[in-house]
Length: 169
Length: 169
Image (cartoon, rainbow over all chains, first blue to last red; front, side, top):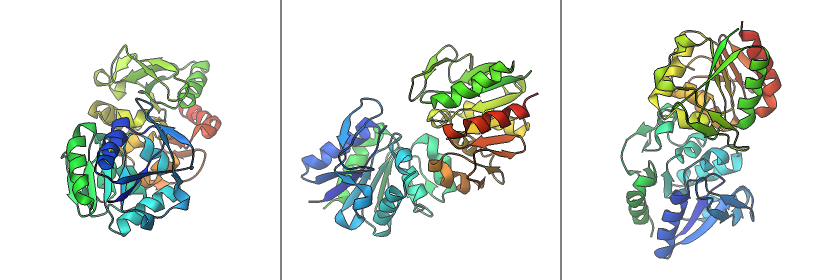
């Protein structure tokens, strides 16, 4: 079973957190909520789903986990303004550990400067940012490039979840 | 006096709309709220300031206005997913009309592909996107590059407003 870090902050897209996390837990995987400050509660953008942060991002490292889930919404924009969140994300990519990115999540990957030459998808509004960062954008429900699994929006969740589960051992 | 288009959608940063607009009106300038759908009301991210859209962006052109204000928050992210909002913004830059951009507003300029070689500032989270788009990022309260006036955040509003007013006739 895998130990999965979910990096998350306010304004996340509720279903892009709840659905993958429920599916991962159903299969027996462990979820750890990593955020800016341990013990605080962050909330989703639409349904205000509350999530309590288990560990501060500046106290953890990728080596402590087997995979990373980055839900979308405006959470990635909040996180990418903090170097600790950016470097934590970068470590997963550098260590070739599974990274599950949906919707606006590539924003965090762009600030971490890890998508040059990678093939991925993401939400419509950030297509130009993905291309400018050297990523090859594909308009598909799920795109796999090595350790990186990406999807575009909540409508892609079934494909995103199934493909992500295949990366977990 | 100038006729200023304010391009705006939900989740705008309240003060980055209210303060410039109040200052422009005090000086006698005319404000037209341009958005995705005429007659709808969009709301700010923090104080839920209501703004009624005067004109749909697909029914107007830059030639109808003297200047463009792009408030920040998550409004630019919503707008940049729509080609009509992107092309409207691009027209102001191509026609060298004053463009006032604060916080996340450069996101709309990036999708419009108009910041290559330009000098500008913006909110921390989008610095990498600005650089990847070919912009020269400067960390200053207000940056002027020809027709383009940019600021970083609500704390820069006094400088942003004063400098923007100097561009209006």
